[in-house]
Length: 380
Length: 197
Ligand SMILES: [Zn+2]
Image 1 (cartoon, chains in turn cyan, blue):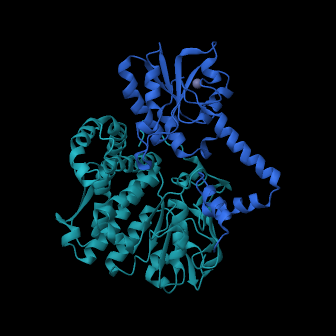
Image 2 (image 1 turned 60 degrees about the horizontal axis):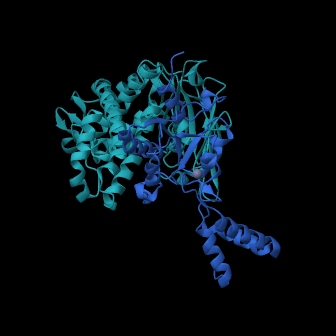
Image 3 (image 1 turned 90 degrees about the vertical axis):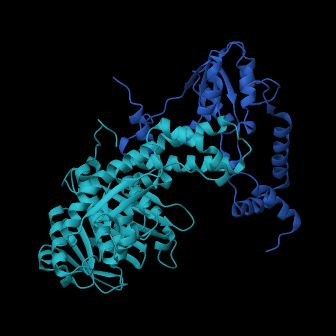
């Protein structure tokens, strides 16, 4: 976050004041040979049996928003079998802006803005902010610390390009220092200093942004959890592995750790080792939560992100909900619907039966039926 | 697939060139087999001549025909300023401007432990030796990448104590570029180094 500098975002939402997609066209993406869909600027329901392509369509939207596939797979896996390239193309709700992403076998993916290629795929970030809620999110609560770091890195990168830059440079500096540790031939302090100085600068920035984000997420995810949970108390906190919070202390820790790091062949100080504590009623959800509790906590995390993002952007990001309604009992489903409606941005949700979305959603939603790679609009 | 031995050797040599994978090495080898003999001879000769006639300048380490390069020999140039770059092509880019009248120093690479490149693999020692020669300013013009910055930090620490003024090239928006299409990294650095008007 750059204090005192407001981000000019009129490339994204000037005309309608909304983040979202009006039209989406797919080519050789997953199971879609070719597809064109027109979304409503409010609620959209994709209904149909499993493995027919609902999530694939959701994933295409996530791809142009985040440059990543939903399930963390390699990009080439999204290309239809027997084809060389997959294309996703969307028109934003504001009318003139068009975003595209092309994935080609054997080369890196390319991002397009109004038909012109951007220098890097990551330069697409921030143009179509979104939050996705899927069953994979369970890993954030249940999985290794690396899952939680990845969650933070993805959310922060899509909101703040500066964070992504710190992260990219930090990771590379880390590789360079680790290479130095393993080579053991230039043991002079002078060889370490340039890399440690950059690790410290970027590492401190990463920790500060992660910490600030989690402090806000703690509040927003808690209120989401209050709505969809069972009266339990959700608590989040950033949990650094060491106390290096200024560039000076970070540098000192690195310097003092060189000897030990030489034995390990890896760097022991820094945000690449940090974690997030997720507690339910003050006990670690990862260890003590039931699968149901973990699911609810994961969903609350993502809905909390939604509110933090809305706060920063001035408008709600696009919300992608993958088959989230079936997990909940009726009361909590209603509360989730309430929450989603109160967020009032563009929502695309999938479910096996349109009726499971409930009348409150169906009365306002554009409903699509998805079957065998065909998408049929069945309501206005 | 088995290649005739001379062909296999040609492909193997081409593959060692930077930026050429096995496929493009093969394509190039087949192309060379098809060109007239005189053309192939000219290429071989050009490589040999360049290799024999060119060397590194004893002073600035740039590519040169003689022990000292034209820039280093030019009495009109200001010997108190040295601009440090990573590659010979960076000298050409700066010379094109016809604005800089100091001397150069070519490192021939950037620090990168991942690639086995430390200070000893670069022309760092040769730079330090030059500093005693009444040098007043060293301009660090390495690329604004992680490795370019690390190399600049390293050199700054090395040169700083000698009392020579050390400066670094500024970086920011490309002139005439559109904000919306700039890569975020460039935009961020332009924002970070913004100046008062
Ligand atoms: Zn010279």
